[in-house]
Length: 440
Image (cartoon, rainbow, N blue to C red; front, side):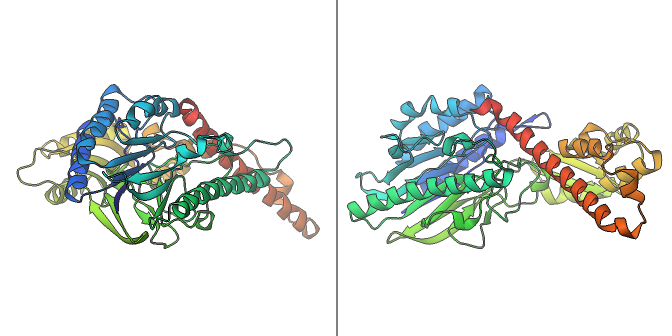
């Protein structure tokens, strides 16, 4: 029994104004070749098939063409929705795609309702209809899918109740899968999926912090004892809690400049006698070189020359997409014309120019004014800047020297820091809720 675990395709993504259509098409073509050459029984896509809730028509066409071409390989496709995906858009075609050996799970349904359980627990079968594995298919979970909010609960109570509800949902699916295996006296693996952040994983700039309600990350011991757990959402391939059977495969192409040096991959997972045997990295070729250059204006030409020699093959016509981060203190409006002149003879395209964060902070201290451009800032940077303008402590708290007031002063400072931290968390949650508003 063999599957390919992939996720976070983000079809339809625009990268600083550049379409990724060519890269995505080459990846899908490459994936079809891998499925054929390695005689794969199923491909699991663990969320974020599309980059937005309203992907461009060419991205939808790629998705449907891939499904159509996969059918000739007798390879089952399992598609799970991610936080970027529209539930309604994925769900609208799932009945049709079921006729093409494709199972689409767009949202978590109430498993207490008869029939819903079979939509999330189903078998991977071979050409002879023999069961090869049982899947507990869990897409991105929204709080309303598994719990009802109650008035008067603290944030901690909500988070704990939500985690318990998620654990219960996973366990219910797992028990159903165990029952199928036992009733049919099968020696086949049970595979679970998920699209979330597991505790302790390493993220990247392109990964949005997603909250399932107030729950930021799920501990590894909250997952059921499945033989393999295929996760999506984190773009860097990695094991969870150093376990071989709980894994993120990562995105197949670099979705931010800080992912440029990562070896992108899909995971080929083999099972023998119903148990996990091996997990093999299938490295995805780089179809569009991108790079981040941290340099100065004086060293820019030399650094780009070295970079191009490393990334571009002699016969290649591709241009490297660049993010240039400079240590120079000049204004960006003064730097950009100079950069354009310096790189004009190289096969590169500059998509982003910014100054080092330390340089921007130093200039702000000197000028008492933030001269950063929006290209240099994240939403969190803007919000943090606004928080700095607030007065969090009274004059007494800030300058109190009275020994008797020491404890009271420290308590006030701690409370102020707690309020700032809570506001930052609420801001991040609100941003993600707004971004996800159109995906339900």
